[in-house]
Length: 176
Image (cartoon, rainbow, N blue to C red):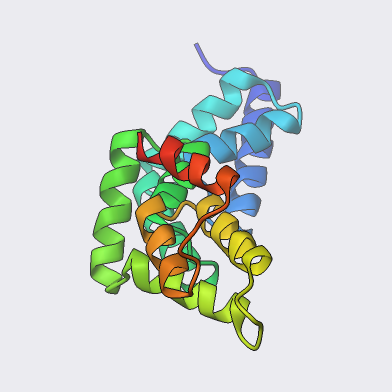
């Protein structure tokens, strides 16, 4: 039994939209499916199209994740925890996220401490490292997913030996 012509047309329309979205930038499987569903395409057909694109190698979560991590390392550095969190939000499994982030950071020769130090230096350039500015830099680094021990070390090096109460609590929570 053949597929009804109307369903074939919808399938082709969904495929064209998916390819259009992929021509703009790479997407994860989850991301592309969500975008298609937001455009009110039938879920079953959208899932079928996404599956076909995966099978054809046009849509690849691993390739997407590697490219996203490389891009973030170059353009808006984050700590490992921040990168893993970003990938998880895009639909990459926690295990795959951790593995991919570690591999890409190793391949790129990226050091979480060096990146955090670079960001802190840029944010504090030409400024007196007073308590307020150091707290802001520390909070920025923590929000970007840098390890709390690294953030503490950098703040210590910048002359902030006595952390304010609320930041000390954040470090303790992250350490646990």
